[in-house]
Image (cartoon, rainbow, N blue to C red; front, side, top):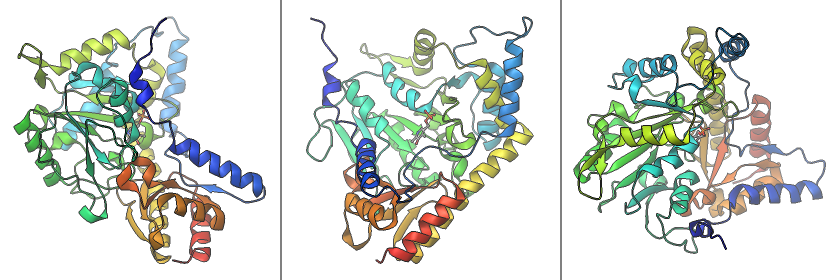
Length: 411
Ligand SMILES: *Cc1c(COP(=O)(O)O)cnc(C)c1O
């Protein structure tokens, strides 16, 4: 009989969101008239910017004309999009990144998982705790971990706690790790990393021959001008970092699908024979073999993000979500809760009041206020006692949810 990849059997059942759905369904069945507001989702709610829609409509029409029809495009993405990305997202911020180092894809989620294709299975791996679960689960699938313990931690992974106790800074490990996942602005905590903090990571990675996977999916939400948007703003990052970016959160492309990964030329890792191999070449080979590019129509939509109108429209979108986050922060603070994040990120990370566990707070909010959020413990053991509230929602829902919490929830 054929066999399966046994590593998949080590995965903890996708527990968090199904369990939230189960508890909400049970509650609404018992209370069919309860006006439940969901502030738990990591998906955008506002429609696509007009500039992107117009560009995609024009691109659809290009596809209807024999002269401008496009078949397979370059696996790496069309040069006009990669040029626009390199110029606006990197060169304009002083980063030495060229269009040839950008690989357009259909998602930062897929890329952050697929990147493991080009790395050995003997690497030691560090993630933050709490963490975006994709980093952990893709390593489990690839066979890079042992089994999970009762708290959900996998053998073989180094967990770097981030919490109020350490001001949500990821402390540099005192041991050597080969692959490090960093996500700033952070999902789920909304925390950010300063230039100095990222410099310390880059220095560590260069000293230890490590590679940093830097997920900057939320860079567009940075409002503090002193914060870096890209790891390539940091001296030496070309020698140790790969960056994931996405149009999902800045331009609402979660359902449209476009993202990119930056692999600097000259960045290397070691082969079994001890020689140094350029990661760009391996990723290029991987993409050319396993991926056939993002649709021409979607890439035209992504290109429009960089037009004058597109830039103005995404600024407005982000300002809208950040205003939601500000309302959440203000109201929960007024209700006596400790809140973090939500200033340079669309997530507010709340300390569950009165020593409640994440799930107890979830139940209490659902039952007393009919508001749904995400228990922090679902993102890792160090998330226990915290709660994530997403700013991705209508203003009306955010205002109403906060009104209920301030009126009905006594700390
Ligand atoms: C939403 C999100 C992404 C974006 O993923 P896409 O596949 O591009 O939609 C990447 N990383 C994190 C941490 C996210 O929350």
